[in-house]
Length: 213
Ligand SMILES: Nc1ncnc2c1ncn2[C@@H]1O[C@H](COP(=O)(O)OP(=O)(O)OP(=O)(O)O)[C@@H](O)[C@H]1O
Ligand SMILES: Cc1cn([C@H]2C[C@H](O)[C@@H](COP(=O)(O)O)O2)c(=O)[nH]c1=O
Image 1: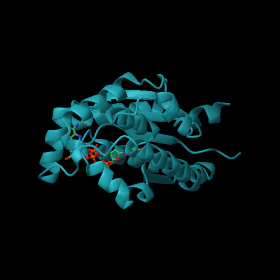
Image 2: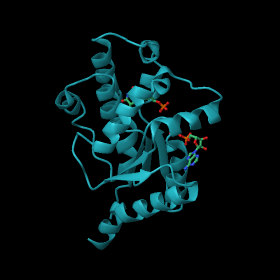
Image 3: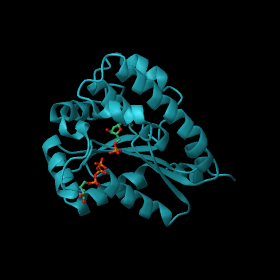
């Protein structure tokens, strides 16, 4: 019997602990088989000079933000088609650093006011089996980034008001709540966060139902 892999997304504001917990997820799942660790946006979007320039501008202008949203959606669909789905279909687990909920949270905070339009752009993005949202206040995340990097790297991370709005979106999920979207208090000690991440991974593992079906 062919078995589809486990699809997990890790989301949160910059500095919330995503990279740290991606390691937890990948280590946990790798004891059971192949794990593909990836991220959105992909290098196509991140490496584009116009994207980098717009992310660094205080006010990129009214057309630039929707342009970025369209490119991010294109990038996501291509990434899903070329990386995520082939891996899941061969039975590998896929763990992605950020997913469509990051797009919604960041673009709403950047001023896109039509969530329906954003959702329509991303309608073919499959819902992960589990999305782990690491909730951390903006000031805590900013301090962590400065402790890690010496100084903040991007304008976006420096804009604490905007990051507060991003966090609000992640917390309130205006795109619609799902039992597969699990909020974890990311301010807890590392061991505690890790235990909750592993608990959620066990609870939402689609292969449990595949085995008992
Ligand atoms: N629960 C925690 N308690 C204290 N520090 C933590 C915790 N989790 C992560 N950190 C530390 O906070 C910093 C940011 O964590 P991490 O790099 O995992 O975040 P991130 O969300 O991937 O950040 P970015 O989006 O900027 O890449 C790191 O130095 C990490 O060691
Ligand atoms: C999903 C998504 C994210 N972004 C933004 C959000 C962040 O500012 C960066 C990625 O930062 P990282 O810490 O290096 O992961 O990209 C975006 O512009 N569009 C998206 O769809």
